Length: 179
Image 1 (cartoon, rainbow, N blue to C red):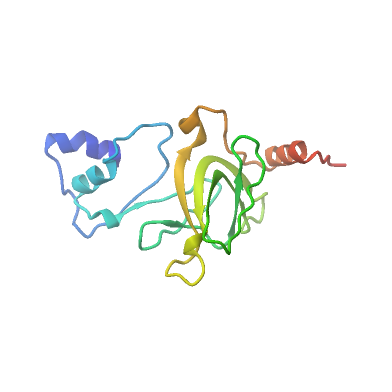
Image 2 (image 1 turned 90 degrees about the vertical axis):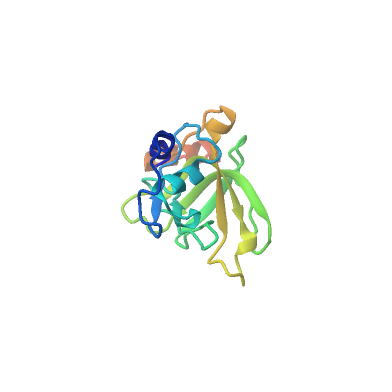
């Protein structure tokens, strides 16, 4: 969507859809650098309001997160969030009853996985905000994705998604061996 908008806006193309259309984008940047105003350019090209531009966060291994009315991603109720320290790989303790924000490498356990291991360690740096949780207008804690750790700092981090890889990681980190 951004490539289309940035290519065709300078050629005079804009407002090509009805103004009440909804544009759903996702897939991440995959290392691409976009100008800070790329979302506004997408809206101008397609002719939609910014609130009708839905930017999803998901991956092959997980369902996309729902978005609340303020445009924030909400942690899915079937997903157990885990944050890891980017330098050590250690778990970051989170208190869901607090109003704190926690930042680290995102991992999660998908409780809906039936035929495969549901644990995933992503390469994304995220912030989880628990202040939006209980008794508020939002449906749950929100998550902000700051980007891929490798893109942000040039370190070698990637997601571990297959069960054998995760088991190898767990055994190495915990010192446990399978008998």
